[in-house]
Length: 307
Image 1 (cartoon, rainbow, N blue to C red):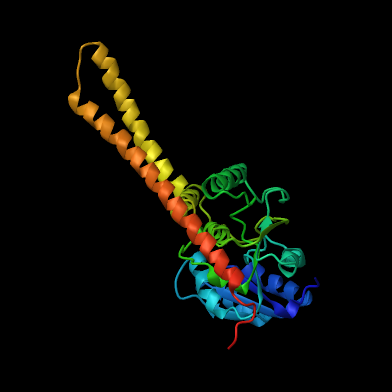
Image 2 (cartoon, one colour):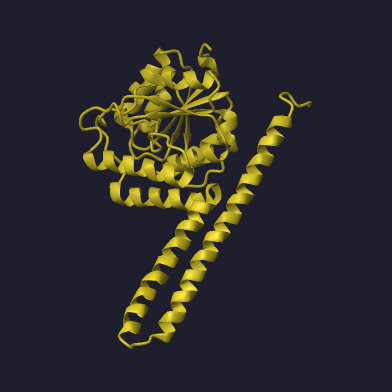
């Protein structure tokens, strides 16, 4: 299906992207994209002024963080399709049509995969392997491998983004968007893209600090989307502690040393771990039932409900 650029909103969250934002918007304009929305997080440079002069609609963000920028932007989306990318010049506007094509062919959420085609120096070895580890952790926790869940180059239709219940304020937002897309049963496509070095702006990502937050978010959000993993993991850890204590008790018992209190603790921990795991099994059944009911409602809903 042919891409209608008049139906596309180019959405760019920014913070101190003065050196790159003007050229980025200009290239999109030259390529026929008329609707460009910039949500600026109170930049201390002239990012907002440059973006507005280049022809974008500029909204000043009320709160801080990339996640909050995306959450605030949702109420301003009024076109059928949204293409989102960072304003730091690391993504190519020339690849916009490749990102949008799956939407016009029926996908609801498109993720640009940077990890197979990045410019030398764009990703450090730590960042590359960190991304790969996070992608596999996401697969284990949420059952779907999406190649690059932390990518900032995404496209989605307006219905899919409005169905997402987004709460994360910072860089964890991409992870949450991926979780919500999987949880809502959206048709997700992955497109190979290029990734360039940052030309003149400093990165706002702290690998260890933000990486820990992202991993925590993957695990935390599994509570709803994959409860058997979430509660099963907690139950397993508790049971393992019980077993380790039990091994110590048994070894000392063979030496005629008894630890009655530790023996009781061993049993309690193992039983507690098993109970938490079973709670996860029950919760997983409820989630599966809820998904089936939601899919049935979607199937029975008329395509054009009467007004």
